[in-house]
Image (cartoon, rainbow, N blue to C red; front, top):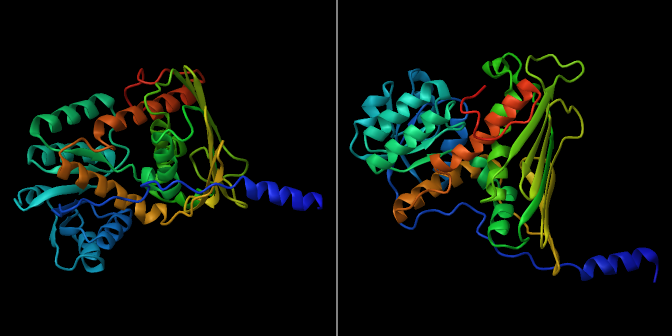
Length: 366
């Protein structure tokens, strides 16, 4: 037998069946409330696509610019009422859940109004710019008896979702190393409001990676974060497009690399090494990923269904609805998301100062 045949036979013998894990969005059994959407900007195309596909009832759309709300109404929910004042939407007794997609600087007051109106809330990410404000909103929601969740939709990207469920099931033991690297072209922001965000990569983009890292690591608490950013040669937009982050834990490490000026050969790679196995995910972009689970039983490659956009948006609303139906905290609650923001704020502060930062010591977006 040729060497190549031996190699193929050995690889074949190491194959293992992929464990069945509930990585797809899980809809509530019966609960189908009336939903209101506040803010009808560009990202809401993915929100409403997901909700329509899931059969959710969106009955009201609100935006200060009426034309934007009308456009979403015509595209997705022709029977929905249109508002330009969010308070009029919140006054509707039939609406139990609101999806608030406004930018952070405009969102806090609307979230507070929704809490006081007794509505369950899905807030766009990043949740807040000040951890103290976030804690206040979490406490107010608890006092009012409403669920407050954050639209960290990356948790339900098929590859990330499968990996976090595999870790939660104990399939790789305790995670001790997480390595994530993303190479892509983010110069599409040129001329848009996003270009005005100096830490565009670490703040607006990497918040998904800080959040999923927090999910992967579970109860393990980070001790320090070191980050740096720099401009790519020849880049024509304002924010630095190269960023790297190192996160230390008592018995683990994580590294995150973001190359946002990759014009050719984009790639997205995640590796999670545990005490009893390893998870790999690799693909050309965020929507196309192949996951491999390696353990003593061999290598398993699940055939994943779905894509981050729009399934991630289905997942965030579905989890909130399930939490309401089951009267429990949603997995992506406001309180849970504050841990991810601690990592994000610490990384940005480290990039600003050139020094390691302990998560939790920086309470506001630098």
